[in-house]
Amino acid sequence: MRVCLVCPYSLDHPGGVATHVLGLARWLRSNGAEAEVLAPGTGTVHTDVPLRLLGRSVPLPFNGSVAHLGLSPAQAAKAREISAGYDLVHVHEPLTPGLAYACARSADRLVVTHHASFEPGRALLRLLRARAARLPDRVTLAVSQAAARLVGDVTGDAPHLVPNAIELPERSDAPQTGPPMVVFVGRIREPRKGYEVFADVARLVPEARFVAVGQGGRGAGGVEELGLLDGAALGRVLDGARVLMAPNLYGESFGIVLIEGLAHGAAVVASDLAAFRDVVDDPAVATFFPAGDAMAAAETLRARLSAPHDRDKARQVAERYGWDIVGPQVLEAYRRAG
Ligand SMILES: Nc1nc2c(ncn2[C@@H]2O[C@H](COP(=O)(O)OP(=O)(O)O[C@H]3O[C@H](CO)[C@@H](O)[C@H](O)[C@@H]3O)[C@@H](O)[C@H]2O)c(=O)[nH]1
Image 1 (cartoon, helix red, strand yellow):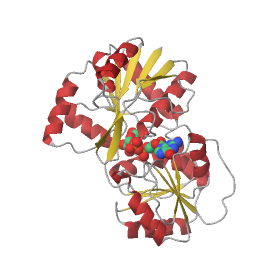
Image 2: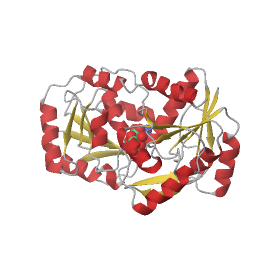
Image 3: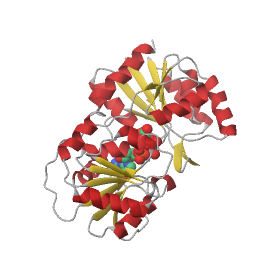
């Protein structure tokens, strides 16, 4: 089966949807499908997955984040032409403007996955409903309850829940020495990622070492800002992490970074967002603090650092989100699509 996985966001910028799509492509290929990824991008991403890149993207601020989308009519036309050559088209975020919507509208055999979660105002809701009404028959997936709620508001449908997945890393048992390391992963400048809280906690908990990975360093005192790293380097940082901290403020539908931290054996200390609790609500490996409250975050972190930590347990929780568990659920959706 030839599958075209369409990602609306540029692969030049790391993000949760891109991580999921590239991982899915690799898993499908290792299970006999000819999967390729169609997305905006200029070739800066390092991957062995075959890519059909459609060039430059336009940054569009939305929901406290920035979506890098391919918006030109030429990109939409090219995307339609390329995606027509596959047996099945799987479009992620099919309602985003640009090439994803163009591919979804023209597909014969279509699966869509909704990732986003936000409260649309009346005007946006009307627009999304009109766009959804123009999509052809399809199998609809959502990565979480939070994402499914938005799909329900827009289309009235109850999508199948198929979570985000990650590629589970090799186990590392390198001893952790020195002060415990607390890691932030994400696009630092985006308000919803809550980096300010992380920087405040770094000042409040000087006994730990704070490391941030991601685009857009701020020069926050007390934090080692490593900038954008490739996947292997990010993995090495996470291997050394005692805690993955996710101080996000709102707008998250899942929280793939929580799973990535757990998969490397770290504990999670995160904002108390419904989407995060849905992903991991096991007090043995994750504790939550009220979003935006740096004092509470610092206290929660201290308690976590002084408690014993079972790295194997963290890995076990992450294994529920490995591709060997989630991939077959996607294949089942492909079967339902005819
Ligand atoms: N290699 C590398 N990866 C990075 C870097 N910075 C971020 N990433 C990767 O980019 C992804 C960031 O994902 P999220 O923090 O979850 O953010 P998002 O792009 O806003 O994702 C949205 O969709 C996700 C998937 O459904 C959701 O998990 C998330 O909550 C949100 O709604 C993760 O896989 C993370 O490892 C970096 O510097 N280097």
